[in-house]
Length: 354
Figure 1: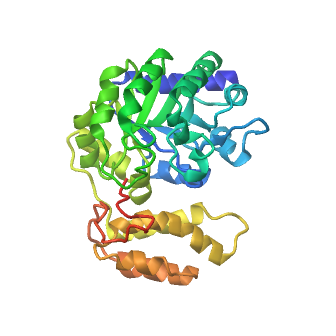
Figure 2: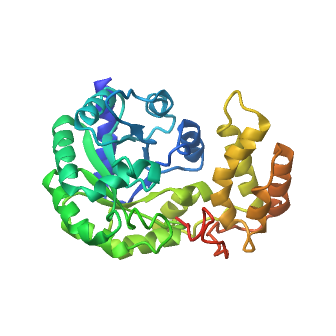
Figure 3: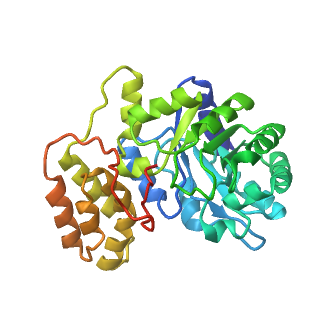
């Protein structure tokens, strides 16, 4: 198994040394699983895939569905295994277990903004305790023999802590840092503070990936220009537009990115429906599951919010695809850039475009 890990590290190192922007698929819990990876790779996919986070605590074991993303990786591209937790012995144990598998790197999540996570002082909650982060990174740096990376936000409720965090990251010689340019409290409902990502780029010797509001190939290049980052991590933008990675690559080569037409977007939704459908699930449950994807896809379908309104109320598969067909049976090119709906602040998607 160690030889496989070594090959994955070699692939990852080749990416880092290539001089081309690195494209990573962001880890999104209960979304970026093995079937979703396989579908993304069909559309070109990123250069590197991050797993959903492994929950780590004193009695934790490697979660089998997430581990399958590593052991059955269908993409041919390197995998970074992400952990979330705060118990040092458990994190060290889990990192060692993960390194027995084909992983290019071990990543520590310091950015998850979900209240159920940060209230336990994990994910973004750790940003309130820089000294604790220092201790965790020190222990993991000694334990990790593949590449060691971190995904962070710029602070918990105030970015004033960011310079202290950068000092800690530098001290522990990270191999790569991903920065989501918002605080935990800002969730996804503010502008992305790209100046803080640029600050990380200038302060650290390791490559930095920029994360936040990467919704098109053109926007991706703008963010690289703003930050000087070594690459980009794309999450919700890839759900909405799985073509985004190849569109960016084409643009970097001087070509005009090819936009999918409506029927191709419809075919993507159909493929997504079947790719992420468990073997045993009732129709209603699968339609409900699809809504978490269509929430993001729907932002780029049409400008009035009518599609999103209707799809959220669908209960049957036939109804679901009837709505999709109504809006997507056309041959018009679709940028799949999010429209600015006048959504109430209580809506899960209010101002959430990344």
